[in-house]
Length: 480
Image (tube, rainbow, N blue to C red; front, side, top):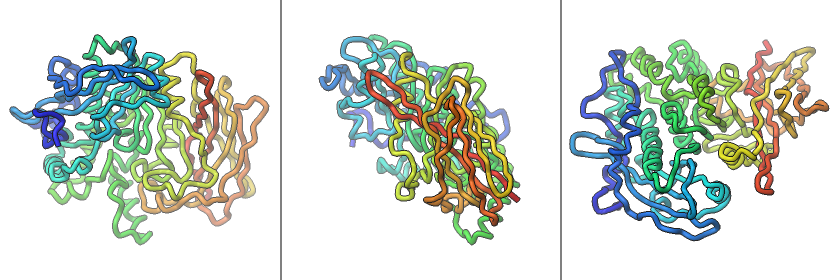
């Protein structure tokens, strides 16, 4: 299938790599991204497939579909990606909401406007659609394998679609949108998505100061020891899995930033120190947690939905302790492939993404709840928990979940040990509404207990209510 006569799908998904490879590990490694090249609109080489045209609907828009040049793959061969732009029919868009979780057939057709998209466009905010997808999903599995083989052979992150390829697609799409100066003017840029479309914008928002907000689901927010290839952490995990009878570990569990490549790299002749060095080199580029200070200075909005039982976000216990300030919502027993295991008392009215976007783009929308502090004490086999919001924050509800003796981060047991149906409780508010408390009877045989609570706040915009939730930090408490 072809996007146009000159844009072959054969090369649609190749990674951008320079004709000269980066130095080997540890020897004057260049930055992961050349932002001067990323932001250079003169190199986009736009190929218009469907020029600006009016589309009538629930809100009238002007739309354009095109391919853009991300860069040169090797001498004489470019990487091109498709991008659809959607702006109000009667004015320029000021900023936009960008998504990569689209399908090729979908993106080639005029965007049907509904829901939150309609509110954004009516408020003057544009939409940008691009494609961040696996090679196999576009029938290019052999090509994906070839690129992965080169990454495993060299451990050069510019051959990795997770480290380099997908984030570059997002950032070049931002460049393409802002190049349309008759239709788009500078403003806020929010990026959202799940899995690869949560992880990729997490990288992009660190490197690209034009991006101002990120809503990411089932993707990694922080750099736990497993992700950084800490030898002691891995030895402990492997020992636990062996004792647990695990003979084959899930391909994502323990992965630095996506599927685990440790075994393949070691089999290719690399040493564990090479894996450790690469992970440390990449940490500042890919983990939001390592960049909280400068993201705060930029006024960036963040919200993560990592899932309590997700094989990509497999390190809640570590992250909850290390980064309790990262805004997080945890749906009980959620994650990749966990739909059938969702907790019966889990929230079913969550509208976090819509509320997050409306709050980010429109000043008249109230703020979402910020992460509360969690305190606890243990006495006479009773766990007393207190969750406190800042004085200017009032939650409408409080509900807590707990789980005894859950397997360690990154283990198969971590995914297997679900929160039982009866291990939850409503919490008691004080009169101000910013403190919630509860007592939990402890299992005398348990060595540790994991807890987290969820809290609701209703936002309003254009006469409609939006239900939002924030979680307290996921907390592991050792009892023995």
